[in-house]
Amino acid sequence: MDKQIRFIDSSYNELFTIPDRGIIAVKYPDGHTENKFCLYIDDYHTEIDGVCYHICQWAELMEQNERICSPAELPEYSLENITPDEFEFMYAKEDESIDRGCIGHLRADFDTGKAFFSTWWPENDSLKTQEFKEEFDKVINYFRKESETPILKSRSDMYNVCYRLKPTQSATDKDVHGFKIITEKHTYYLRCNPRLGEYNLYAYCYNTQALDKFRNTRFVEQNFDAVNRDKFFRTNSGFEEIYYNPDSTAGGQLVYNEFSFELIREASKQETMMKFYNYLNSGCKQYCVDIDSAEFMDYLKDFMEREPDYLKDNKETANAMIKAANEDKKRNKTEPER
Image (tube, rainbow, N blue to C red; front, side, top):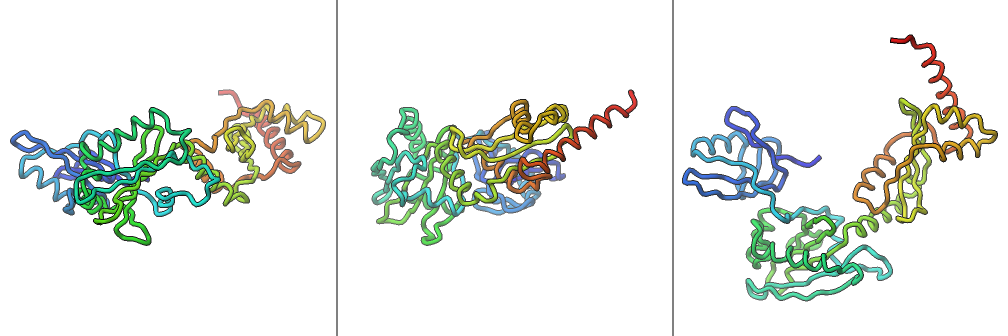
């Protein structure tokens, strides 16, 4: 669950919440407003512009000084923290044959301070659309000129932003930090190093759908024994079958088949086991979650963790479904009308 920072009044009434690394707007008695960056520490403490406050201490400070705080308007783009295993997406790929959805990367340095010398290195020009080019230009300029966290404005600003946000550090170099920026269609990974004499920025640009497909496909391959299972679950109205289909046009998908008790009873009239399952599959409600969709991994992990009532489309499963369907029919017949 995402961490939420609570803001209260001095009587402990909750006023609002913001997500970890969110921004509040503080309005002063003279009418001017300042935005302040917030880090979650625990449910009762937050770091505001580098200073730790108990949430009640902050409330009293606001009231005593006649200040009003509220959630700031959401920025156009925001820096998000990464997990350690995401660092691989901030470097050139080792295997040229794989397609990880990377469009290319920008390498830049600040020279002696505030300059910004950059070079573009392509990886997959077929993904370099006009929409991407315009958006990437906006993202870079936003973090150079407009953002409350202007990490690309200068070397000192990069250092200060990294100090404030405390992002994930490289396991091999404590001065190298990682961020990501997520837009509707793209993910930008920023590898930041404010040291003088180094390239200060590597910005790797990805088509998010293609990146999701690459990561999800690799996860499936690494966990195929746990994924390659045909699971059946008893529901209130029948049974649900879930399995992974590696041969879909998307490159893989989770398939959900819903079998009502009525459909199971009709299928039980078929002469063979194969015809029984074919009848179910032709008449069931079905939906699929493709491997390149943003929600695929959540569905897959849920599928892997859930213990089924039955495994495989075999005779044992068929007999159990038919028995449950017939019991449902008897139960409905004997229940009195209300």
